[in-house]
Length: 466
Image (cartoon, rainbow, N blue to C red; front, top):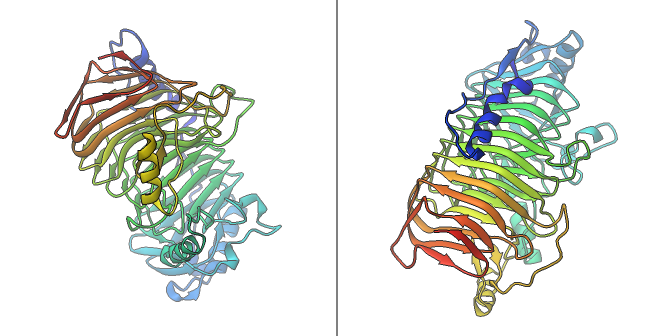
């Protein structure tokens, strides 16, 4: 089965956000639900198409034969029985469920050449000139399900990245393949499978709608570079529920890369992130790119332990846009270094972070989590739609955080301060307090117990109620 959402499936989630921003919310909407639609009752077992599952023989062609044959017959389940299958890039089609049986594993090859885009595979390009290990494009009713896992063997890719970073004395970017990539598609379902050790981002869904990610596992070493778990890019109607995250970068990074004339107010909308558990990683994020706008996001009832960040909106000048109607509700954090970051700045400190930090400190700025924040005397720039960060109507409710280093930062840009950030029933225990700059904040419902100084550190442009 795949899950199909449609507009009605997300009505309750959007009603929840609408009620939060209503002056007198009196009821709570029911959780978003997904309505199932049928995948044909046909099974195409990859071993019947020649797959060996020994991790010695390359099984790419057998997998693709099974997918193509199943699609030609109208769709069905492409079954991967128990075994270890060494594969290069494969391409899923409409009405296909790639089902990984318990104890099955797909292992991505580490040769670069098969991941390079060609004239035949250009519809599947992910970034630069790469395709992913598992590719979906211009399709509908596609799912990846089961109890198995997919391993990208990322270590060799990460080592190459570090060698390049040392050579250039700066970060190497994300010029590497993704693990799973879907583009311009509808009714996508990812359920139960583990995604491990991607060369870069694990699951990227772009220019798509009606998406469900449930009960997945996303795992990569904490020091692995740019291994985001989920990147929803220019998407609509998506639920991310009951997953486990333990990765080297963002747990979720919602992005709007471009403006959409059909949706001028928000290219990204209607996303629910609920009931997940996170460990290593850099938090549940909106940004860094928000060019086309983001609205109607609900982040609720998640547990984060030991991560660098908790909840974040990070959008820099030049790649910023309007982020609005965002709710963070009843999330719990333990030993998260910085539970909250809402910022109109996002610039990496570079390879020599110690020297950069010293230079910034001399001017009144600082570095937090490898990112640069200038002094509160930063000059105001002209406002530009689809470029200047603009964050408004954000609510943080019922947050509990203990063991933090810094409670958080709220740092807007002077030309467009953060508007309407409201804290309600928020409790944070930290060493340092919450920094507020260029932001309108209602902090009457915020309690910060800072052992090392002031609970609220107010700088230039901090307004609102305390």
